Structures are given as structure tokens and as C-alpha cells.
Image 1 (cartoon, rainbow over the protein chains, first blue to last red):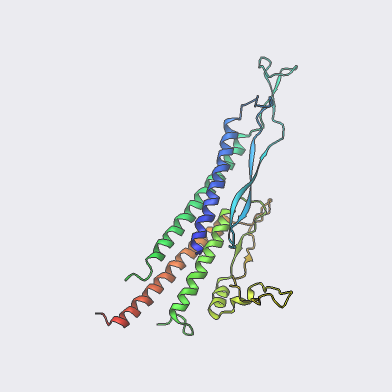
Image 2: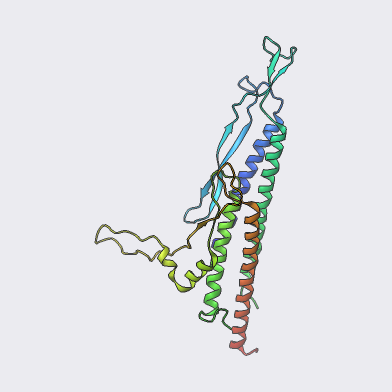
Length: 135
Length: 138
């Protein structure tokens, strides 16, 4: 039944968008992490989506294709007393732009809400369909 | 009592509801892929899709199964045909190649949901009147 597929499609979108929100929260939390596990500054993660075909259906959900690390270097800040400072007293900061992350977060949360709406509407329609023919 | 004179009301309601939930699924896909790079929004031309279902010409859209041997099944054209999916013209193309316009999809989705409810209401009234005819309001 096609309406059931709408549920499936919306649920793939919800899980993908929540993964994106997780990545964004991680980026924001690590905006000041100058020394990651590999010794270098934290590299922000970006989630890339791709359509996820549903077997035997024309509709497509969405899935996370990859989580890419942002390799662009962040700004250098002069902090001579810092343990990670180089010979000239500069430390390499992570390339996290809080404004960029916040904008991305608003977009992710709006997409999430929209798919919740899709689910609610599909649910209402299905409940009504169950009542078809009841006098 | 027929909604469209040339078709039986129940037959019409069946085709209409089937096409409505099919379109709901397509629109849900568009909304799920709002942030997918390169995704192109799809939709069906509803009036044409419904007419094809009603007239039984939907099968002509199905992919024919090619047979390379005499012992192959000949089922070309008998696969259930899904309505042709078209691409939506983007209002404002985005850099990542995605053509999903949230507002357009939302309004089509809401419109489709209301029309599905309308089709169900109509089917319910057809069923009620037939039940009345059968029982004579006993």
C-alpha cells in the first residue's frame, strides 16, 4: 500500500536529518578543540545525502552517503603560552564557523519538522482509510 | 449517483484513491530529499494518470519484457503500469543541482491530502447510499 511507503520515506528522512544534526552539534561543541586524537585541530564533519531507492517502488527515501571531513585549515591565533603553540606562538584553530553551523542547523531542523508533518498527514489519511465504509 | 458518468462510482473511487496515495508517496520522496545534492523533484500529471487508470491504458506505459527465445513467457505489457513520472520545473535552481522547492512541495502535499480525504468522503457516501438501497433503511 502506497501510503505505508510515505511512512517509510519520511522515517528515512528523519533518521538522516537527525544524523546531520548530530554532526552539526559535534562541530559546534568542538569549535575550540585545538588538539584532536590525531594531534591536529578538530576537523568539522559534513553529512552528504543521497536518495535511497525503496525496492519495487518509485518513491525514494534518503540516506547518508558519506560523512566528509572539512580539510580546509582554520584560522591561526596568537597564543604564545598555549601548549600547542608553534615556534612563533601561533595555534591552529579548527575551521568551525559558528554562524555557518547555526544556519545549517536551522535548515536541518526545518527539514526534520517537515518530514514529521508528512508522517502525521499520512497517519491521518491511513486512519481515515481504515474507517472507509463504516456507516 | 455516478461521479463521472462513464464510469462506475466504486471503480472511479478505487482508481482515484490509488492514484492519490501514489502521488502522496512521490511528494513524500521529494520532501525527504530536500537536502540531497542533485535530486530532481518528481510528480505525476494527475488528470492524465487518473484517466489512464480509468481507461486501462496505464499498461501501455509498462516496460515490455523482451523475449529472446520461444520458451520465454510473453508477458510484455501486462506488468502493472505506473503513471509516467515527470520532473518539476525548478522555480529557483540551486547550486547543488537539487530542484526541490519546499513551499511548492508542501502546498502540493497538503492539496493532495485534502483531495484524498475528499475522495474517501465521496466513496463513503456512495457506499452508504448503496447500503441504503440494499437494506431499504431497515
